[in-house]
Length: 328
Image 1 (cartoon, one colour):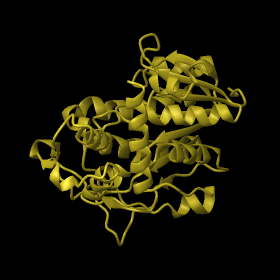
Image 2 (cartoon, one colour):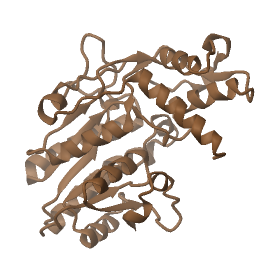
Image 3 (spheres, helix red, strand yellow):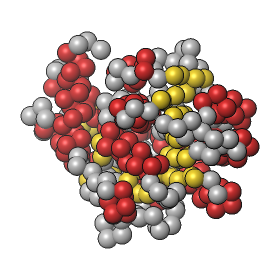
């Protein structure tokens, strides 16, 4: 089954990454199709924010339902398939472990099996995660050869999906690849993500709407990048000449305390006067230190992050200011 040239299908188009990937592909002249669980009730707020909602063809599809996946692949016949669906919150995965692992692992297998069933000669990109690696150290940032040590149901699902992609690539010669993306933020993140919670909390304090912000441990460290740049890396991965897996990261790791300090500094506030520790926000298990080596992506894809943690904080604060000015 030959795919339609210059046609892309984004499974999970309503999310942060799906919206930014769609925007990039549309700017390059591709016919872009996107899915959500139910297109009739989904707001597609991120697509509307980028003013691309009416430039795409939208479908209802559930990746954990094989028949649903087959039907959308038959209808679209895409050349590129981006699997960006499934539950995407590490914290929420502890409350919903079965649903999280099922949606990630079985969803990924369903898409590849549907490709094989239909004989669809498409290119498949799978959203893996830096969470697969578990703890790293400053001396040994994770690259494509680093062993996996997942520490959450979310990470277990992502690790399983990564190896499923590798198996289908080898056993069935599918053009299937995974991106092991480290943390990447944007204004499209919901408030359950700590980065948005911090930025909005700092602004609440600055505007007198709150006196304090409650957070869990500030000692954990992450590599934070800018989501639109990471979307560009995803497109480069699927367009590369061979199906390979890539770590996508900025190469810079900072503590959550440093992120908090930067956010409050944008409002000329000392975070230590307003942030209160609350152990209720601690996860059953967590990654203390996460760092990535994006060297392969730079060498083979020509991709390198230009925005790092302090840039990300400034961009998020600016977006939150604009959001409140228009009364959203």
